Image 1: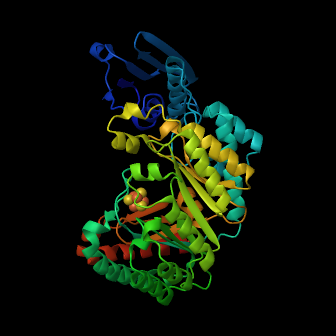
Image 2: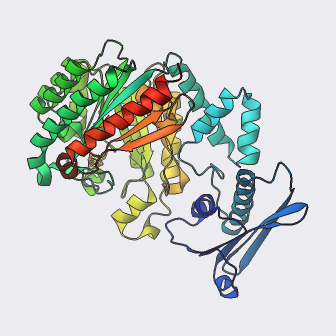
Length: 493
Ligand code: SF4
């Protein structure tokens, strides 16, 4: 497939639209018009400015079939970049819908945070009807997705009622796992190969925690939530987790903390001793993720634990007193079937976790797993996600955060579901970008939200070895964060 842009450079957005219909493909891209570019399948995307009007049109060919769409706008207030881009995206979407017969339920909303857009509309005072109209007519979203995004935004509004603009969250990265799951693309070092790094990593992480507390805490920001993610934080020994958590308690003021989460992740890393340490240091939320309740699928994806181990860990966490347990599932895993996924959903609902997060496998990962992307294009992920949504709604869960990734199977989304009042604030913050998150450890990225909504990201070194090696340089980045906080978050007072 060849993409030819003329009079515009909206490649990023419009290539994403084409990928909705023609996924897992590399495109030839040109910014000039030559006859030979039109010899195979193509999308021609053109903006042509006349004296009084601007013409926007798309011509697409797949095989022998060609579709053509045009729009014309006056060279007035309508002729600005953002509007031209959206109109061209719509025209392209319409051509490709007709040519392929496929539908894409999020329409031309190809970004990863559709709910953020709805939140902005609500903040502008738009009514439900106006929001629905804009999402439907301007962005071509289908009703099911509009309802989902709107409902999610309302749940978030309720959950965030008491958020202070002078608060922040702390993210602690533990990028180690006991082995690598075959669908994983996170930076997680298999503890088998990098176990020697863990003791030094824990030392440096504790140094980073105490240094950060000195630099940031005195600035008057209140610590609101803490989240340990990975990797698999419970890959560490209990005494290593204890050291990190103790360092946090010593150096940060936890008196106003509203939420403390440790993502345990894999059942094969969970022990009573570790859970007790986590609980004793104040974490009351934990994530234990089966992904599927089918042992043969677990084996296919290289997750070295069984369903039985997951259930035992879940019950142990309940017995120890964790108030909120999240369980992650993945729709579209290789060898999983709709029937098996439905059973997974029912088995999870029967356990009554407070949160359930339903992910959809991305095509890239599926393709890596299967080596041939065409083996996964017909994956029944959509039926799986629809079933999960229906059953979770019926069982008293509300959607409270959602995000999309490029290349997701069937152009779907990941949805976090929660029993009312049990939502994870941190998950909302990370998706909606409405609170600063100071992130520590290898691969962590700090996101600072200025009073005017402007974002600044500061990245730590990605891999544990470089994190340890360049530790002093990394501490300098904390001063960068401090300056930004003083000028852009507190400076507005
Ligand atoms: S447990 Fe999670 S982070 Fe670790 S390898 Fe598996 S998918 Fe990746």
